[in-house]
Length: 115
Image 1 (cartoon, rainbow, N blue to C red):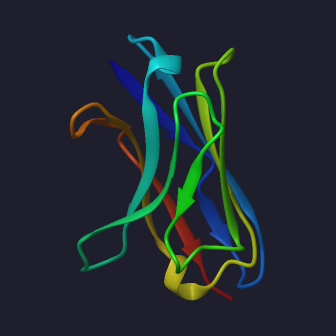
Image 2: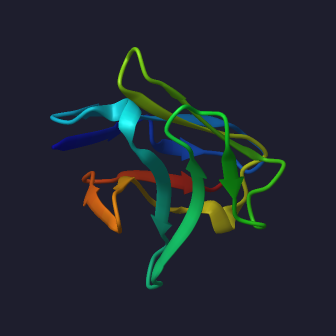
């Protein structure tokens, strides 16, 4: 199993970024997927999740209305569109697969929101 995130970077407050997670080594369309982040000096924070067929999505209150999770099962790819970014969104963002627990994680991609 391999999960590889990309798309992070430095963005000004109010800006947008789109993250991707390329999955391999398992049947992507069988699994619920999620994005989890870790801000500097803080613990892991669940951001958003999506059902195996993409029909159901869930998001933390802190990102509702600003972040959108999606997936393309034909491309084995998970996405996170982040709009209206705030300084408190600064974190390493991880893509993770949910079996009975979140059992596989990517290496993470850094998102920094700063002027």
